[in-house]
Length: 286
Ligand SMILES: Cc1cc2nc3c(=O)[nH]c(=O)nc-3n(C[C@H](O)[C@H](O)[C@H](O)COP(=O)(O)OP(=O)(O)OC[C@H]3O[C@@H](n4cnc5c(N)ncnc54)[C@H](O)[C@@H]3O)c2cc1C
Image (cartoon, rainbow, N blue to C red; front, side, top):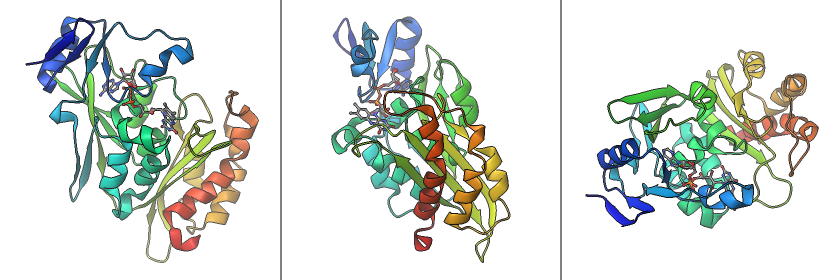
């Protein structure tokens, strides 16, 4: 039975109740950690009139690490995600993204679902990390479940349609090395001005069999850097060589101007971030 604390806040205990409430009331807004939503006035946006607090729903909790897949509940906080994947080599980049975002207090409450569901937030850290992992987003509607590849999910507006809830994200586990690098202008707690996340399939001897590289915060929407992926495939996994390849390909980006940095600067730092992401993925080459 859902708790109605007042006419403005609903606290469902199950996914079914949440989906029923969303279907019955199109003006109700899901709220998870509230770290993005509650700052709406700072962005000149109105606060939602009615909220659906989804923190008590068990179906959105937990990280399941199995042999072939990892499933992360939408309600998992950045900090809990970092703890859950700590020491799992193929998920290193995801752990780094979760651990480096925001600041310690925010990381304890900000959720995976909130990070992914927020359109118009180019600097989200988990988005490029999950894009590089070729993750699949799970969206529950009242009558069905949808599995949406990250690339397609990011093209949707809104990413999570009214009446539905993002319930989790699934990553296929591969023999891969992954790393995440971000640059902030002043302190670690700032939004990153540019982010590079990558996953590398490696042959014995260090040749890259497959590269997936994702870039966040440079353009309005995070995206894969397919030209660099193609240039890296078949080459030796070496941070300096990768940075050189990135340097020759940055012209393909149209950096966004913003309060933290101009567009040209965001693209200019990409080769350095590619090098750092390589070093983060392959610590022994650092
Ligand atoms: C000081 C500060 C620093 C920050 N720094 C960073 C940073 O460095 N990197 C970074 O990535 N983020 C950063 N953030 C932004 C924010 O913390 C994250 O984006 C966070 O993951 C949002 O999660 P939340 O649970 O708080 O979302 P909420 O604020 O609860 O919700 C955000 C949006 O997502 C929707 N939503 C939430 N969950 C669901 C769901 N399951 N299904 C459908 N819709 C849903 C809500 O309706 C809302 O529109 C920062 C925030 C603050 C306040």
